[in-house]
Length: 436
View 1: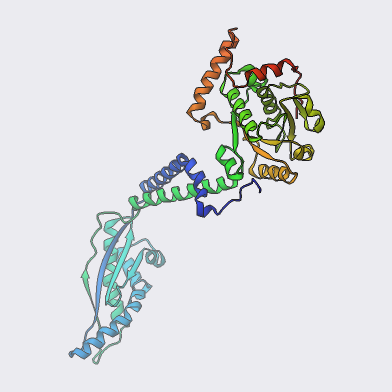
View 2 (view 1 turned 180 degrees about the horizontal axis):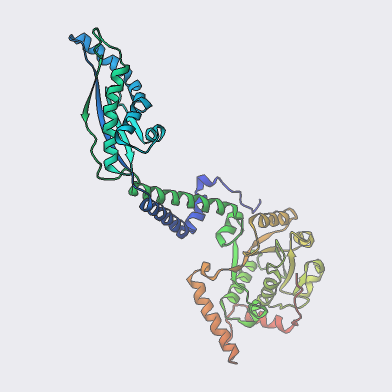
C-alpha cells in the first residue's frame, strides 16, 4: 500500500480554494484597489448628458376601422426604415446647418441613437453631448428635420398629400444628471473585477506553487504522519539542540519522536533507522545527530553512520539504536540500497527547498526498494505556523540559552529513559557525525 496520496478532484473537495483563503488579505487589497481605480476614473472622466425626443408616426388618411388597422400595421413595418432615416445625412445635414455645429455628419451620427419600442409606432431619438443644453437642442432639431425628410420620401395620396404624419409627443429637455460615467455602477464593477481577477490569480499561482511551505502542504502529498516540526536553524550550536538547549521545545520534540519511533517498531533493540531527504542540505545530518542524542547513543561510530558505511551485522555494537544518515535519496542510490535492511525510514523535508513532486518521488523510490517509512520531519518551518504553544516553548528555549550563557547549571531534564540514556552515553564518544 503506497503512502503517497492521490490528489482528488480539486473542484470537488474545494481544495483549490486553499490559496485564496490563505491569502485573503491580498484579495481584499486587490478588490479595494479595483473599486478605487474605477471610482477615480469615473471622477476624472468628462460627464456625458443624454437628451431624448419622442416622435409618433401615423397615416394621414383612412376613415374606416379597417383602413386605420391596415395603416397602423403598415406604419409599424416602416418604423425601422424611419429609424435609419433619422441618422442619415438627409436629416442630420439640415441640423448641422441650423445649429451651426462644428461637426461632420459622421461625428453627429455617432452621438445619435434611435430606438423603436416593439409593436409601436413611436420613435425615440437620443443625443449624447457634454453640454446638456446642446444635447436637447440637437434632439429636438433632429425630430423636426425627420418630419420634413419622412414627408418627402413617403408615398403620397391622391392629390399629392403625404400619407405619413409625424407628431412630436415629447420634446427633449436639458438633462439634470449625467448619463455617463455611472460612478456607482463603475465602482461596483471595479470591485467585482478586482475580486475575481485577484482570486483567480491567487488560485492559479497556488496550484502552480509546489513548495511544501507548511504541514498541510505535506499532508496533501502523503499520508505519512508528521513526526515533528523544527523552525529556522541559526547555526551549529542551534542545530544540536539536544546538547545546547536540552530543555527547549525542539529537544523535547526529539524525545517525543524517539518515543513514537520506539512504539511504532515495538521497542525493537537495537533499532536501525534511516534518515533521508529528497535533496542535499535539508537537514538530515542535524536530525540524525539530535535523534542519536535522544536515543542516548550520541554521534559515536556505533550510534551514527553514513549510508555508504552501513553494514547490517555491525549493529550489534549499539545496544539501543543505530541512526543511518542517508542524505539525499534523489541524488544518491545509497539510501535506496539499504532501505530494506533498516527497521524504519524518516524523511526530512526542508520547506525552503522541497517541492511536492520531489517528496512524492522520494517516497516512491524508498517504497519500491522495500523500505518501511515511519514519518516526516519538517525543518525550517515558520514559528508562527506552529501555534501559540510553540511561542511558549521558544520562550523557555531562549531562557535556557540565557542561563547557559550566564554560567548557570541546567536542571536535569525529566525523561522516562534517563537511566538508559546515561548508561549509553558513558559507552559512547562524541566524534562528529558524518555529514551528507
